[in-house]
Length: 435
Image (cartoon, rainbow, N blue to C red; front, side, top):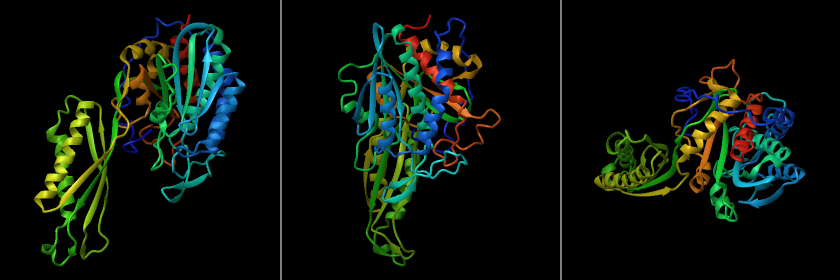
């Protein structure tokens, strides 16, 4: 998942709401099935954790997944969106098709966690040799969905419908110059033959205790757009600034003025939004005013109209602020992931189902999350539901532990059985197998 900061989720996640599970009967054999597969899930997770692969390079990972799915007798397709793996399970009775998604890619992060299966892997990222680590927990997502697949195969005759297992590469973003992830899977025909009637995804997070599930209706995670502003001036000696046009001062003016977009120009009572600068590149010596400065940053929103408006305002401010100082500015916006929206009807149906697994007090409603997820592309195509699984040991304070994307990110493996059972029960309920 793409994050805005290492404080991902910490500020809002414990504003919880309690849901009743009194109306939901237990799913047949869900807990028992999960108990049978738990040790396998942990073993798969450790193997994948020790052998992480960057986006669009998940070659070994896809082979592990393919081998397991074929051993279950599933119809398997490989090579979609480079390394993606998709399998179809046909239920014993007619009914809808549901999609279950797990992302596969790791991050260019060097692991510092002291584990016997810690990653020692390296690769090249943006021309530099880097460590590679499953610092966002995608190894757990793959392992859990492999476990869910095994569970559902065992009860396939009771399923009134079919399941599409989606193992997706490049959620963290494709390498520069490449396409990837959910968007490319859809472009290459993931839903072309038959679109799922519902799609579900799950993500681990260190910001909640082990076994807690976070589920929010409606907009849940922000859209994400990146921008680059090139500010052009005219080079001159630092001792004679009047002899040129200073793009550094113009850049400062742009940065300050852009802050008024959120504070003064958009209705933040409608939905929150964020515009942040992440880097300023320009100049090389103390006494040389350069020709050009580059600014890069990110936009996060929860409303599509606001998203479009902010993009227009950003470009206008950059152009006009630079012009007042004799410089010019060119703004380029690289569209990113849409808002992740959880279908309200689907969430309403599945809340008591999840509560029946984890308990009423372990199901919470987190606040809006300014991180972004490309699960959003699936949810634009069909009703979707994306939820979070806490993985921080209960004797630790989630606000004090390393967050997702940190080299110290740690997963309490006892949470994995909760994730497997929860997704199994959600799938069984969606396909009419709950009694």
